[in-house]
Image (cartoon, rainbow, N blue to C red; front, side, top):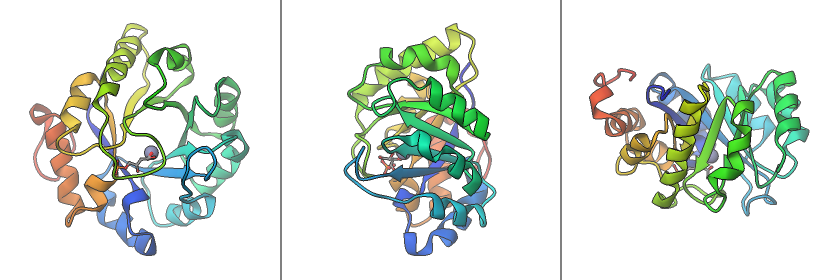
Length: 230
Ligand code: DX5
Ligand code: ZN
């Protein structure tokens, strides 16, 4: 069943020189922090890694949703957990059989999810839903923030929603990339319940107001008012 709208802010769009401060400003307005780990190999960009997660853990009580855009993500799961990660998502394009990674993640005490790129079909993910606490449909090519939303992925969100509901699963359905006030409503209507937003939060003059705006734009009928949680 679709869950209430939840927002995960992607720190990729934050000012890394003032990261603790940036997170503190939005801490009480968010449901979780989305942390994009990139290795310059699986994606053509390098972002941040375990030491940054550890430093953030010291200043934030939010759940840390770590999106691993790395080759061989299994190698880092225990260290991720020790640094303060709560859940990890791994790309099916990097880990074609995610079952061992799911087991290792659970042994380490992490929530686990699989991610598919815009070019990967929903069918690639379908066999693994039962392994997952969350599934993530990318709505941009992974590697960079600030890209335009690819609306053709919404059919995959709809397919995932149907499968999750038909099979009575509890997993979150996340969408990541190009989410803003103009795109979040369509993603919600397609069945997503966990929305990653970087640019639309941290690149706004008032990130807390921007989060409220996103919640309202996602589902006006669910919106409880400024400062409220849907
Ligand atoms: C892209 C990352 C996204 C990115 C989203 O590889 O996975 O999480 O930060 O950024 P926006 O919201 O700016 O599209
Ligand atoms: Zn991400």
